[in-house]
Amino acid sequence: MGNTWVTNIQHFLNESGELGDLPKPALNLVNHIISIIEEATLGNENEPRETSIQCRRRPGRKKCTGKIITYINERNPTQLIWFCPDCDDNGAITGWESTIYNNAGYRESN
Ligand SMILES: [Zn+2]
Image (cartoon, rainbow, N blue to C red):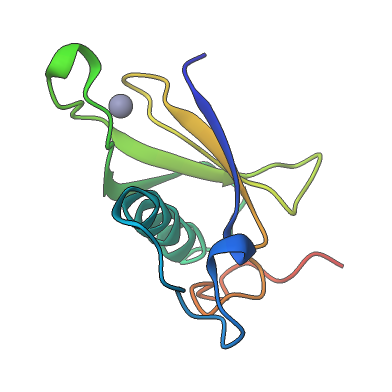
């Protein structure tokens, strides 16, 4: 496995649930995470979902051409798992259920 990023999106949002003021590198990561939440919640099946999101890694300084795949962690449905099938960049997103970026395809876990 490559680098694993565990990100609680709530840490990057202000009281209104919007993106707070962030330094550029953090902003780039958070925008990536938000895109994943938006596309991951478009459907309602628990099948892994291929998104249109370009992998952001550059292994060997060549841009990875992989497209991010996401799915809900069955053992822990609060986690949105994502990975790049080409370079194995991967991570888990938490805190996404109540955000404005949740397209409501997935119900909040109950
Ligand atoms: Zn990749």
